[in-house]
Image (cartoon, rainbow, N blue to C red; front, side, top):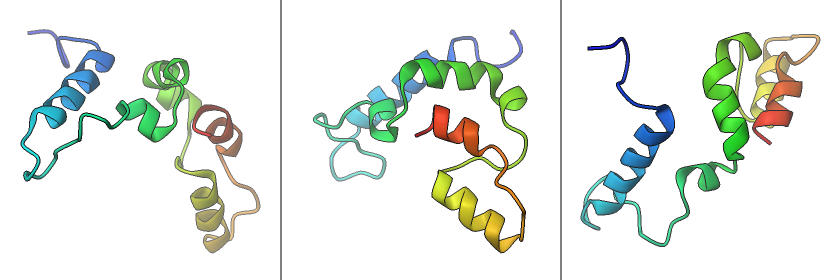
Length: 93
């Protein structure tokens, strides 16, 4: 067996999305058929998602998340600047 999953991450996410749509309405994890795909719901461009899956560790060092959360955490930690803010705004905004 190869190291890791034997398929692409995109295919795995589509499988998860499909599975959640197939679960009965009254069950935990159900996603209604009218819901947009996971990337649409996260408001992430597919090209940026693919880039992040291939370069995440080299692109981000430290904190990652919504820009307003990063700013709040950095303020609480008394950081002088907000690390990764540019990458977050470019790839996740």
